[in-house]
Length: 295
Image (cartoon, rainbow, N blue to C red; front, top):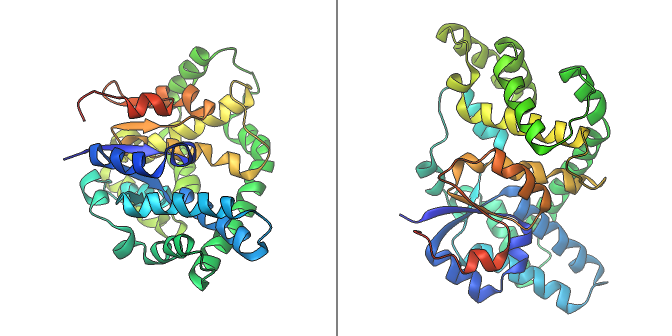
């Protein structure tokens, strides 16, 4: 079985089509829905306005083709995974890898094919609109991030280093009241309709550790705390545009991969704090393509 490689947009764009397919022979490539949605939304703009050059469309067609032709696997959205985890059905890498774009995400599959064909199909437009709605919602979250942080975490003290950040996050996760942490996780990462069932499972299990109760959701909580306090302390920088907020989303999928490849500086600074000793972080494309380790 191939080892699992999580990629972001910088890697998708930075590797030529033939080299990307060659990479897929050594790794099982996985990606979040937001990566495909962004490719599709960018293609919609080009196809609708024709303002960009044919070269711009060609790049997007190649990116969509890489995802389709490499048999890369698209991972379900993290709230879906967290909800299942909180209900006791913990995410299984084997199950996730059995899911295919064509069978399990047919709308996204058709939309990506439309990009490859340069066809402004209804499916492409619908996915692009959904992505734009997500961006709008995320922009509102980003605008209110400081207020949310103050109300949830209290302290306004800024940390001085990444070592301080990791220590603070570990302390916070170890000392937070379990019930309060569960409330936070449900509000941030679970589907609202599942909240009563999650709370019932928590009561029935008499749990005192969220990490034991729902390890994937616990990871998402830790990644969120790490990211938000890093922003608050200005230890990482992200743009004001909502798209930059999605840098965090890739970190939610780290427990599901053997390696993560990204050229994003935020990922370079935060991912090591969320990865295990048996996982690999590739910070440049040459390093990934020339990797000779056990794959």
